[in-house]
Length: 495
Ligand SMILES: [Zn+2]
Image: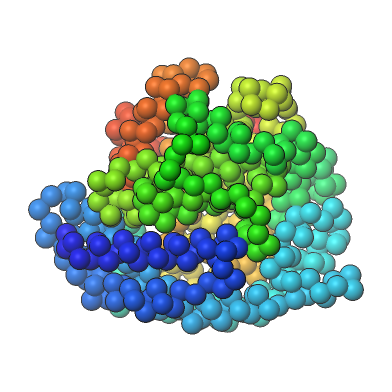
């Protein structure tokens, strides 16, 4: 592996992540990546990507081959982003400037989604959603152009389609994942549909046939439990959770908690691995509530994974690799909030049946949504669905999976580059296996076990070196199947 490339890639990651952190945390008012890409853009040219492929082919060890492969996948991602930077900026500028007239006010386009989530009247949600749709549709020509450019670049890289390019670059067979994940829909269908119908009826007064994505989002808000999840307890819960594993977060010099309130700081917690493992920031703007705690524990899982990555790890394994290998730890921490024992110990909540029913529905609908999204994205990126048929395909796939109506206009806004959606699904599946393993080995309160903590630290030290499937194999849990996740989702809905 050329050390100059990896050193340069590391500097790029650091500067890029720092700029992103400063903007999203509200420290900088603009996100200026121009200097970063002026300086490092040369790392992501077609020639460099081809050279990384040649390096993977000619590598002497499996480890070197994997490192070159991971770096190549990351370089492709940046190459795509660079190809359409002007378009992305034009779309972002449009979105930032757009407003809709509503109730005698001008509502910023970017604030509509959060407004929809807190609007209790179904007919008002529909009216606002229609106005949002018109703004989204206004920029869909630009999004089509962006999609076509990426498709051309995949061809320039010698792949017949984007789907083939990503599957080969990431080393994941997405057709196979999409097929196997189908069991998540069939096995949970009955229980999901009946719980969904009940929750929609009880919480928003909408029938399942009429429900939109916004109705579901509103029904899944757990505002009635806000008192149990106060903002002031967030840092304590984070501290106490990891203390149970023998990790004193207060003395971790490499993982900083950014809690300061700034006007333009993201309301959602996030983790910025600026330098791995030496400078990781966990950014929180404590608002409280079940969802905010879930996001905090999720991002806390990422932060600890990055923070415990060994300093000797190859750059390729510290910064790039199988994204499911980080999401699994984030989900493991996040879903503690679905464990009645954790809820009792940490929040004194007792049974909390309604909370757990709604939270389980939220998780199941999220997983099902991702199965629908993967089916849609795989067909679109492979070319089986044409761009002109994509909006209908999107509505069908998402509707079949979530059993609520998706907005046609979102067929390109709701599309992740590089099949991230499949990595979430693989991470969800692995999380259930890992959680079960920890419970069997360290007891029902495994999150209070130092030994469990030691095992996690050992796994985290390898960064992204091992794929989700390799982690499963290493723990004797593999190969990753989706049936245990389906069973776990069903069990959650039955609680
Ligand atoms: Zn995550």
